[in-house]
Length: 226
Image (cartoon, rainbow, N blue to C red; front, side, top):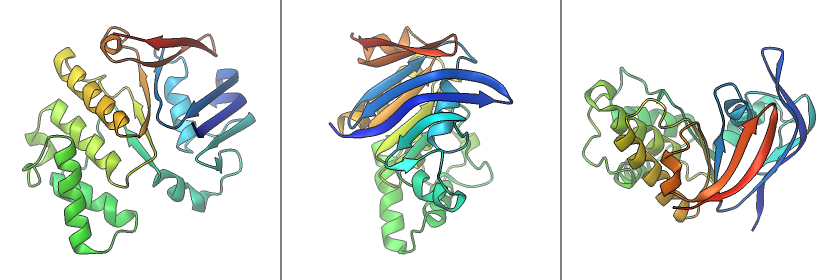
């Protein structure tokens, strides 16, 4: 399998405090990788590094052929177009309909053909089981539905990798399982998924490679199986 993410001996800091010390990690095409550990253990920090919001101070880090230590500011949007990013707090635009939230992303990333835009919006909403919700506003949806919109947004540009930062953190257990099942199905279609979570019990029903963050280090825990 093709290597999509290569991290070698990085040191990563948040607000001048070191959160990861001499960490190496390789992730390949088609993998579903859980990043587990307590709050503050570095899970979110490494995801921020992968979408070029944090820069590693030492070592080497590459994602999809982009060198994260040398990437120029003008090239960050090019990288992010190949990534789908899912946040814990959804980060939807509350004054816009679901359709207009998705339209905003497509136009911002270079889509211009009206028919193609409308088709893609319908496709991603169908993928996350929200067909017919185009004209609703975020506040009219449940938390689980808002997170599905967030995942639909992440799918718009057919990303090679989805980075999900505690996507079930604000949801009840039943809704959380539905979100995880959705991500799992997306992975089965060939998209690599890297998901940070502290909910160890939830992921037992969905097998994936598991990396534990602790003491500024990472530890490979293999694959959790149902």
